[in-house]
Image (tube, rainbow, N blue to C red; front, top):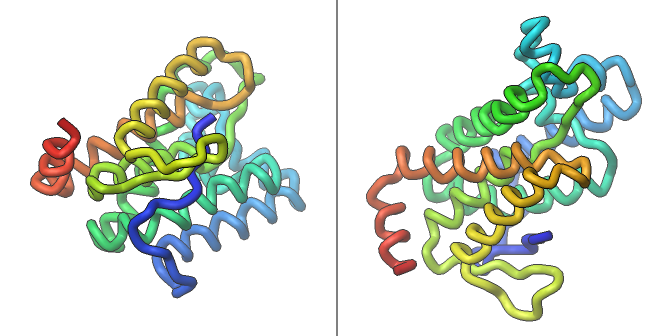
Length: 210
């Protein structure tokens, strides 16, 4: 698994930034859902209920739930490292657009794939976090990432290609209980929306890769 630690661009601060507000909201809702089980059941992503009961809110609310502390910390630390960099490039309003819409879009493949399975459920912000990571990769051509199992940083675009390949392969195997469809869809959506928002900057980044 690819595990991002920090982009070698700018060290983020603890100022009350837009990503920090998002992080705080996810922490609050996740903890409440751990304590109040009906809240978890009302918010969790259920493709069956989305399609057959029209409970479309679940495609959004599931992004504010997490299975446990490690799941929460991994997603939010990744968002912390990358979020401020994306905000600096596209602005806070467009960052909110990117993040919130990515939560929903990342669940579309899952909804289609498991629409007739009433036992399937999914939760977590991983799809939106993947969108933020890929946005950062396209906005900063010199971005490098440190991975837990590699001693040296690797270029962002290599990480991106590896992430997509891993997500696609893992989705095909579907053996680990992780919603890799959401990871893949969030990453692709984040890249596409970033191009729509900053076409010149993304084109410049892409040209530097080749």
